[in-house]
Image 1 (cartoon, helix red, strand yellow):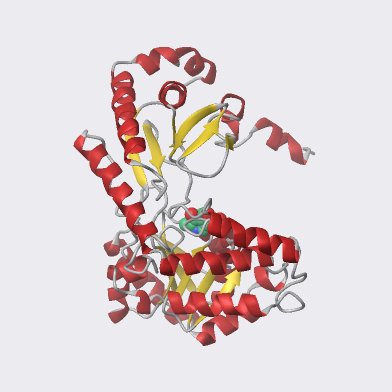
Image 2 (tube, rainbow, N blue to C red; image 1 turned 120 degrees about the vertical axis):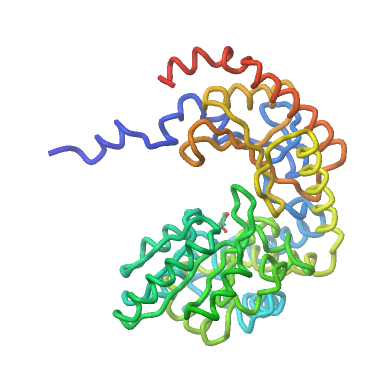
Length: 419
Ligand SMILES: Cc1ncc(COP(=O)(O)O)c(C=O)c1O
């Protein structure tokens, strides 16, 4: 018989197989200093484009003060136990009420982490007779949530309403046999390519099909909509989103997440979501911290205005220089280039070492072979100077990519990798 670890040692996985070449630099890099537009990487200052601190809240003194005071008063542990047993406080409840009001829903429920929270919500929302129909490009947490489902599931092509309609027809037929219902899942903003989910079009299908809609708005919350209430507000369909999800890990620069829906649905989730029933409550540091961040979201609209000034300057600047930024309709700014993985590594090294620009690279298998995606997250902390320097750097690296410099520089790496 084979030892369980044999396979793991032989096959490190699609990303893990690059660990020797990538770890510490391309993956698991250590960014140092306060979270802001410029941080240190390996001792050098970098313009940082890879942090989801959209509104620049992470390092605001008034927020850090609240975080610090909560830590001093409560420590990191309070309250102990799951919400249901001994981990419930008036602050948790206040935050839930304020979140519900902010996203125009009757009720809200706090989650310790977005990832586990949405998985567990999916698990609780469906029974074996129900059918899930979800966007094929959904975030890993949605895919993992769907994996928990023991009934049928269908994917629809990314943001493709015709494909959704076809799958809703199939799901409807099946649901008529099983006696179950249908849950459609999409995202407010798809975090790699930056496209907003076509929520308006999805919601329009409710006139033809009977389904409930769950939206993961991790990247839309705080960044989209007049008040920052997210993609549903932006597209004028917030009321038609049956279960709204957002995390504190991005525009709120914290930890935790929440679900918002009709009171009856939230009440059900409170008593049936395993990730919350059987796990410790969100600590007070994060609860009081989130209350402060939500207050800032509501009272400091200039943060979102500055974010969008930067998003527009960066995206327009890239387009003017002929870069392909795909079909983004959000702050997430992808830049697509053609090249191999070794070329991508040489390019990113050049960007960091010679231009002081730090952004994340995404390569195969996350995107198709031969494509390089430089994923940029503009924030309210970036300056016009950061954008101008970055645009010049991008023009320079594109030229080197096209004239074969990176191919030559990475030839040895490519040979070693068998690329
Ligand atoms: C679309 C999306 N959903 C959910 C999550 C998970 O949220 P959290 O970081 O709070 O676990 C993320 C990433 O953070 C995300 O990008």
